[in-house]
Length: 182
Image (cartoon, rainbow, N blue to C red; front, side, top):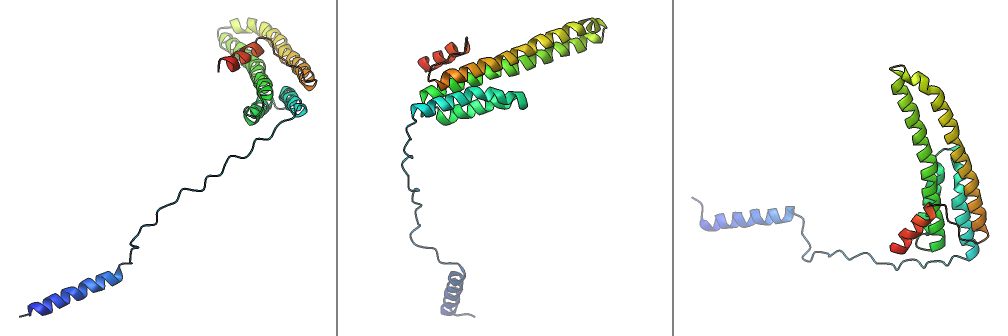
């Protein structure tokens, strides 16, 4: 039989071997220090001429719609997001431009699409064939709206380049109301 001392010695040796195999854990856990918080970068002052230029560019972004069909409001929205905290004038003008372009370009596009969709469904029962000339006439008339909006957008850009406050009809009052209420 085994002696009790031999059993205890063998148990102590096994524990020692187990301790050697397991990596030693640091007694104190390193606490993660919060990342050093940097102060926000200083906000640069925008000169009045820069304000007028950015407002003018937001209105001129309507010209991008001629080539792409949709980038105008995106550019005006980007200008709004970049300058909304730095210049109330740029924010107001660019938000107006974004909303105006969405209403005119997207709205008219959806309206023309809806007219032709109704004509297509009605052509199944032959009534749509009679509606096709009217749909074509409505499309031509509705295409005048975006072209007129180009002139209106350029007029707005000229006004802003001279430092004047420009308001789109209906849109400008609505945007100004959101700024005053917010």
